[in-house]
Every structure is written in C-alpha cells, then in structure tokens.
Image 1: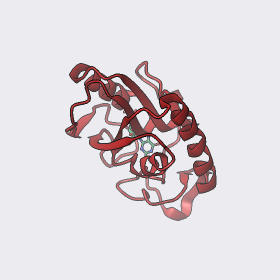
Image 2: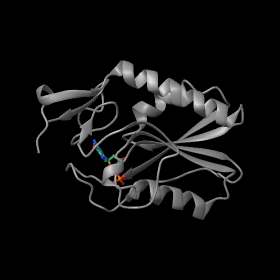
Image 3: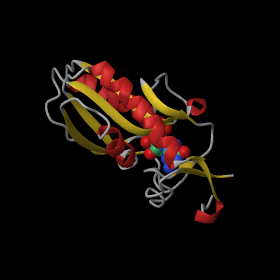
Length: 176
Ligand code: 5GP
C-alpha cells in the first residue's frame, strides 16, 4: 500500500487530539497527586503525543526515551519487537508512565511491561497510549489510559509514520 498526502482523510483533528489529551492529563494529574514520575516515551512514534501530554502534567517529572521497532517499512507489524535502544536509568521505587503512540497487536506493550517488571521493582507502572487498536490485539494487554480507539486501519500523523513520513502531520489521518 502506498500512502499519498492527498489521499489522507482526517480521523482525529488537531483540536480533537488536544482536547482529549488535556482530559487524559487531568486523570493522570489526579492519579499521581503531585508524586514524581518517570515518563518513558517510546520512540519514534510517541514523540509528538508525549511532548504534548507532558506539558499538561503538573507533577515533578523526568523524561526517558527508548527506541523499539516492529514495523520496518510496511503497514503491518513484523510480529517481532526489536529493542533498538532500551537504556533506562534505575527505575526501582519509581512511578513509571510508559507513553506509546498506538497499541496494535500489543506485542510492543507486553515486551516493554515485561522488560520493566523483570529489571526493576517499580512503585507503579502505568501505560498510556494515544490510540488503542483493540480489534487487532494478539496478546492480553490493555493500556491503562488511551485517547481514542481506532478500528483496523493503518493511521498516520501526529507522530505515526508511513515509511518514516507523516509524523509531522498535526492530525491523525488514514487512507480509505
Ligand atoms: P504492536 O506491537 O502493538 O503490534 O505495535 C506497536 C507499534 O506498531 C506502534 O508503536 C506503532 O509504531 C506501530 N503501529 C501499529 N499500528 C499502526 C498504525 O496504524 N499506523 C502506524 N503508523 N504505526 C502503527
């Protein structure tokens, strides 16, 4: 499948995204109630969402970045998660919030949750995704927080790419 900019339809506009992100941030501010957190942004896809989300969070916060990949240049997951860079500081005793772009099969989310639980005794671990593609789930995992559910379409924009492109679109788009 090739995706051209002129073929894209808007699924969620910039305004809808910002409104929803503020709502999710409000829930997170209530959950943590001023306690310090480590926000772990999963590169590259979650970068745009994470930078908007953290600016709505009001607790002491450190950001960490890890890089995983599962898609290559196609529009379907390879089914294998590659840890490109998963260097993390000591997370023992910390409130850890994973920030991801989309949970699709759930393999990446499960890999990450298992990785953190195997390597650290965190105080709390929460998973926040911009999008939840529940219908394509292959493993039993749900994000604790998400902004929007999407059905089985390949979406781009707002951090999500097609072959590296379209991450800079301010909306979530799809090709019909
Ligand atoms: P999972 O491991 O849950 O199958 O896939 C997670 C990763 O696949 C996401 O972090 C994202 O990078 C990529 N992905 C899954 N669905 C889509 C989609 O609809 N569009 C784009 N651009 N990437 C997707």
